[in-house]
Amino acid sequence: MRIAIIGAGNAGSACAFMAAEAGHKVRLLKTSNHITHDEHFDAMVANKGIYCIDNTKNGTFTDSADDATKNFQSLELITRDPKLAIEGADVVMIFIQTTYHPELAKRIAKYFQDNQLVIIIPGYAGSIFYSKYCDNKPIFAEGESTPNDARVVEPGIVKVLFKNARNSLSFFPSVTTTRGMAIAANLFPAYDIDRKDVRKNIFESALHNPNIIVHTVGLYVMYPMLEYCAKHHPDEVPYMYRDALSTDMAWLMIKKLDAEKMAVLSALGCEPTPYLEACLFRNEEDLTQDPKDVFESYKISSPPGPYSFDNRYVTEDVPMGLVLLSSLGEKLGIKMPECNRLIDMCGGILTRDFFAEGRTLTSLGLGELTKEELIHFVTTENIISNQTAVGYA
Image (cartoon, rainbow, N blue to C red; front, side, top):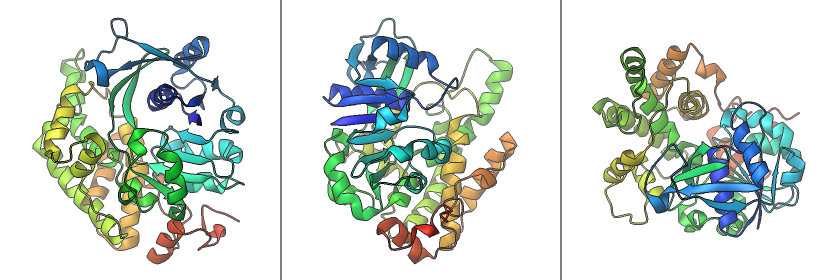
């Protein structure tokens, strides 16, 4: 297949390499200018491809690529032109921060084509924005996590830390699931899953994004550790997974937040899978293992940081994830004290109003719908007029 990867950062670069390694023809599109990864992009252009250190084979994390085994895959196209990247592709995969979805949709959705599979990772219901600006009829899908965890370690070189065993997708509207899965199953092995494991709708995918739980709680608990190191040990940095997520406080918060998430999932008619069980499903072939033990094993190999509280773990996953969860809870009549408190506390630290900034049913254009209309909208084509969604006029 011909794959267009949108976003030349950590996840996009790794998936571009993996898709090329699997035999697909890959186009890589960089969407930003002079913000991040410009040197990395320029190196890939010069090399006409990308180097990768596969940690799943070597088993060692290093910030330096000097002493590591690197493999190379050439890419069909590396560009900043969305038209060249998207037109003629069988699959489009979008790897950008969800805060940029509305603006990026205006720029690129006009190039989407009929029956093209467009996968947005992470989604947080962002496919609603892309559908607004799309004249044709692609198949929209949303992922709850990337097929791998990766870091750009040097310009032109990405390191894959681990690969998911399975990745659930959802489709918008969900009546396109069968057609979409027929394409996705041939993309990566992680997408070749049983039909029963495909999410019912894009809200289920959004709430099963692991970052909505682990990034928000983890970095909030890590905040005093960051402050302490900055004042007393400026040459050191704590590890969110190793340090913050080893505290009783973190797991008490996770338990409460996870319970609110599962209450919303149940009210939407979805499977209320706990966070740790969802992680086990994504990460391990052997599902008989203890989910907490699997999580603990990941902590050992996780990289240091984040280095600042003003990080996408908060600035993306709180307004795009937690605020959406809160909005759904409000619509469904479910009390969300832990979720709302975490939103307030994170916003207070950064002096930002994440409730005002965040993704809500109202910002998606769905605020006036009843619960039943909301489920119909994400499930069935044309069940509600397009004028209902995202400010259509």
